[in-house]
Image 1 (cartoon, one colour):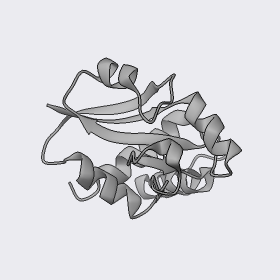
Image 2 (cartoon, rainbow, N blue to C red):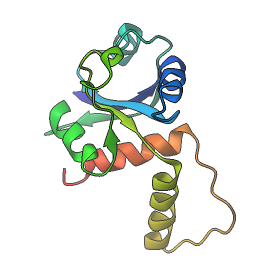
Image 3 (cartoon, rainbow, N blue to C red):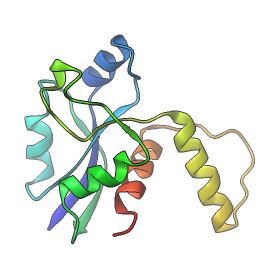
Length: 137
């Protein structure tokens, strides 16, 4: 069974921040291999990858389709513009405002009203990416 996952690397976040992209960058992908092996191999020469969230037993969804669904709403970092990415697709720049809006809208549709400031952390960013990848599935 395929696993849809969101991963992050502090090295990638630091590099993206240094080149002016954003520090909120995440890798979205689908794999059939054990997730620990995939994370250990890493992407684009960046190390320290960690799993933020995953959805198991994904059927009828492949890597390209998931990336296409997310890229319709979230800016994917163009791998051809940054030689350091080495043609790697599925690396997304997510803004905190996008995630906050998603949380507010989800709560409103569910009928729950929680007051207070929303603090978005890595799991909320991952939830946002996973939600967009699963749309229409």
